[in-house]
Length: 439
Ligand code: PSV
Ligand code: MN
Figure 1 (tube, helix red, strand yellow):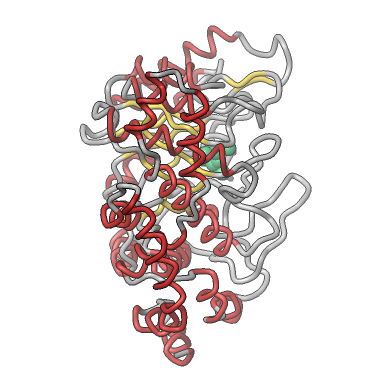
Figure 2 (cartoon, rainbow, N blue to C red; figure 1 turned 135 degrees about the vertical axis):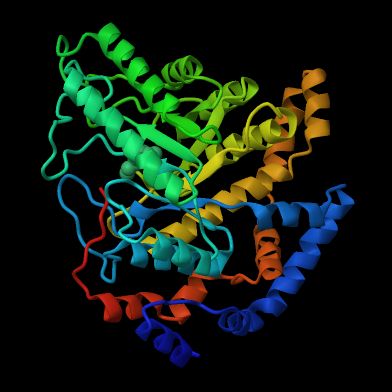
């Protein structure tokens, strides 16, 4: 079986075939069956439709960002993990590996100019060969590129300097042009724009400039595209950020039009913010367009999803599930992992994140919404808490495995990845000291 893998690598297309996965699954399937039967009985007795829940888990797809396939860095340094992708083609191959193992990562999100395709046709073919589509495109006006005619040092869409603003708007239009060629249908705008010292920026002018620039970008979007406006309270600016919170993003999205939405990134909140309530508010108004998953202890730490605050993630999913079922005016959100760490194998990190996302989703699907509503109606606070925690404390991993078995994915993606020695193969193919583009 390793022979098959090696042959494929020589052809520059590393694919983990269904047959290989099936072979590995055979060793696990007995354990799986007994765990699943036990849970299925328990849930069915409690009135849950297990088959429907498993189908929902199997259908849930999360986009992988092209910049998370290499080890992330901090301002103190960046260490290559080895075997990192050094071209867009190789990045798609890596996402293809994750998708083959999980069948939950059927989309990729590109960051321009890090990922400008040199041959659009070839890139599209490569994506199709891995079963991938292109999700939201991301613009980058937080870094100056070599040869840039204008600088973003003091802002981009908010800049006092009109030429910098026009340059940033034009960049976003260019991202839309590239995205159109790849059949993407949305643009995510995250701005580093802000100030590091009081007096540096006129807040009202900066906001007005940002609104005008976003409206221009919105007007340049095809009619079937959506604009996602991402907020963040601080970093890289440490005194003010022009789009600092959901309210500012919501206001700007409303100013742009009905195809503009707020994007929530879990790491973009001040400590202890009630993110589930933000999600609920946005969904109620039909304005939650996109979602970036990660976890954090202090700030925008970009840690593996579910590694620090899994209960908070569950509560957020509880609101997402409720909103998806009860607020049809909110579009189906675009899901993406926005995490990358500097010490883990980036692909294993993404596999762990996917697992945590699906666990949170599955446990939220178990919440007995009818009983919860009744408890809320009766002001039975103890019962309401119990209903949530009863779902949260259920080990739903057999449901995830059932979904994977159904779709032909690996029962245990990380173990299969390790058994197949994928990282070792990537290092021998690409070398030890390659660094993928990203932060
Ligand atoms: C900014 O911190 C952010 O969350 C945005 O989504 C960027 O595009 C991404 O991270 C880049 O790493
Ligand atoms: Mn983000």
